[in-house]
Structures are given as C-alpha cells and as structure tokens.
Amino acid sequence: MQLTVVDHPLARARLSRMRDERTDNAAFRAALRELTQMLVYEATRELTVAEETIRTPVVETTGFRLAAPPLLVPVLRAGLGMADTAHGMLPESQMGFVGLARNEETFQPEAYMASLPESLVDRHVFVLDPMLATGGSLVHCCRLLTARGATQITVLCALAAPEGIQRLEESGLPLRVFTASVDEGLNENAYIVPGLGDAGDRQFGSV
Ligand SMILES: O=P(O)(O)OC[C@H]1O[C@H](OP(=O)(O)OP(=O)(O)O)[C@H](O)[C@@H]1O
Ligand SMILES: O=c1cc[nH]c(=O)[nH]1
Ligand SMILES: [Mg+2]
Image (cartoon, helix red, strand yellow):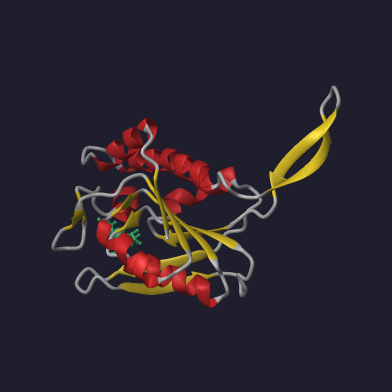
C-alpha cells in the first residue's frame, strides 16, 4: 500500500483550523473544502493524460486531458464535504455513494446505502472520507469496490490513525492513501488523538 502524507504548510494550516474546537460548522466545511483541493491535487499527479491537438489563437499545439477521470466515491456523511470540491477539480468524473455509520459501541461500520456502478473493472476509484480511524469503514467501502472489479483505489482523507493505516495495509486491498496527517493514535472510544472530533458532526451537527 502506498501512503502519502501531504504535509504542505497550507494543508497544515487548514487542518489546524479543522482541529480547533472553536471552529464552527461553516468554517470547518470551508477548511475541509480547501484541504480537499490539496489532497486531490497531489493524488491526481500521476494520472495518465491523453494528448490532443488544439489551436491557440496563435498556432496549433499539443493539449492534454485526463485519459480516464476516476470515479469519485464520497463516504456519507462526512465525505460529502469533500465531494463537491473533488468534482469541481475532476468535472468529467462520475460519482458513486456509500453510506456508513460507525456503531459507537462496537466501532463496526453499519452500511445504510450503496449507489455504485455495476462494474468497476478498469476504473480508478477515488474514495473520499476525512477520517481513517480504526479503518473498519474504509475497508468495508473498499471491499464493496473490489467486489465490483476495482483494482485501483485511492483513498483521500484529512486525518489518519496509525491503527487504521495498519488495518488497510493488512487488508491486502489495492490501495493508495493520501492524508494530511498521521496522528498519534486512537483513544478508548476509537476517536483519533489529537484528531478533530466527529467529522460528520463538525460539518453538519450531531445526529
Ligand atoms: O475508521 P473508522 O473507525 O471506521 O471510523 C471512521 C469513520 O467514522 C466517520 O464516520 P461516522 O461513522 O461517524 O459517520 P458520519 O460520517 O455519518 O458521522 C468517518 O467519516 C469515517 O467514515
Ligand atoms: O476521530 C474520529 C473517529 C471516527 N470518526 C470521526 O469522525 N472521528
Ligand atoms: Mg460521525
């Protein structure tokens, strides 16, 4: 599994805004959108481009476009806050959706929706979820994708715990992970420390 930590000063500043308990829902969503731009920018660096001939007002030249825009899959709820920004940067991409809620007693993900193309053979998938804690939710989501034939999955998250990274590594799933930080670890409630709290609640309010 390839792990990339995007520790650019601008990413650190946005993440600090998200961590700060004084940051309200609107400012948290804005910082997540800005951080998502940085994650998408880094994660798309090696995507294949196709050449095409274009004309500038001056001369004919070679232009470039993405050969195969990835399928975007935000994990509801918290991943919704990354979806629009990622889609803005990858306007030709299609989008699927996976809904998961972690049971806060067992820490197991409970699935409540999946809306995905039938076949993901030969399709690169970008999974969007700000939090990788125990890794249970992302393993569940990525297994839904590989069951449909996906062999190339990129996970974008704001924050990761070492425990979740290890779980993804041990899963053997075909993954690249981009995160702005690998934090210290999980507490007794399986929350990331220092973390930022519940990323869904920080954006949308508690349920
Ligand atoms: O790595 P894990 O231990 O599985 O935890 C991470 C999951 O927890 C959060 O979602 P949550 O279940 O709180 O749902 P929400 O987005 O609706 O708040 C987060 O967005 C991840 O999906
Ligand atoms: O710290 C955590 C762990 C799981 N889910 C969150 O939103 N935050
Ligand atoms: Mg939550």
